[in-house]
Image (tube, rainbow, N blue to C red; front, side, top):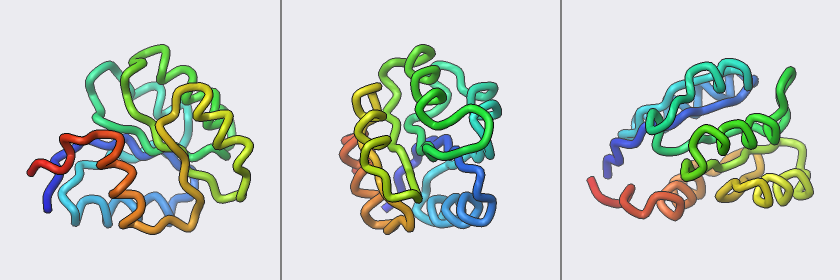
Length: 126
């Protein structure tokens, strides 16, 4: 099934983010990679992206700060947080700040797709 959604994928782990972008493209998504929070904030404008996948632990501006700024720009954009440090506390804090949900790395691509579908119910439509 093809989804045709535009995804901003923000993560500083180059191999991870490139591989995830390739896997999302295979499934019909249109991912754009930002390797840090500053880059993400510089390219994010209202209605540019359907959803944001955002790493919590990044150098420079951290994921929670990026989340807060994205929500100031476009409060309705769904954001799924990604963390590789096994911390549910930051994930819960992110949800308090408006994130849709959070997932632990390593990611299960099918679980990620389900979360995207939950965040954007129209994503089930080709």
